[in-house]
Length: 137
Image (tube, rainbow, N blue to C red; front, side, top):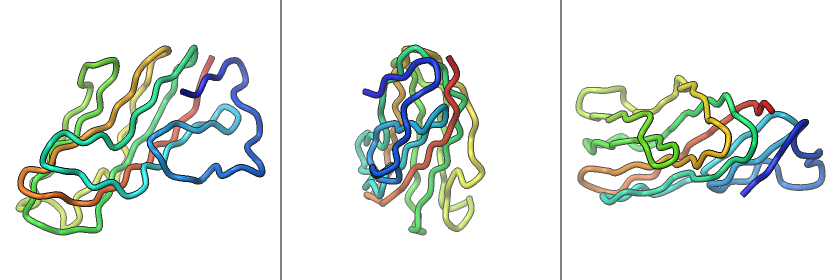
């Protein structure tokens, strides 16, 4: 669980700031998370999850897949146990490779628990999620 205050975390030079995982990373006042490839199942699947401390974050998230199928997927962004965004991709009617390719911007309040999760309707499919933002004290 990353904790930052004031000016943010120190320089991450020498570490792996571009690695994947469901956690939130900080470089100064900026933050990011890369889920890596996650297989979203027909049951609720967590793609990204983290807690923040005494800052608020103005974030953008985009979600992508390289698969094209007739599966539908239900995406949700949950803050502190409450859904703040729900989007369903109906692949029979939407773009060839459904995504939030056009990022969605939202605010994560201080001391929040963030969770991005999804459910496929008929079969598992691989997805990735990218979150970028800026933290404010």
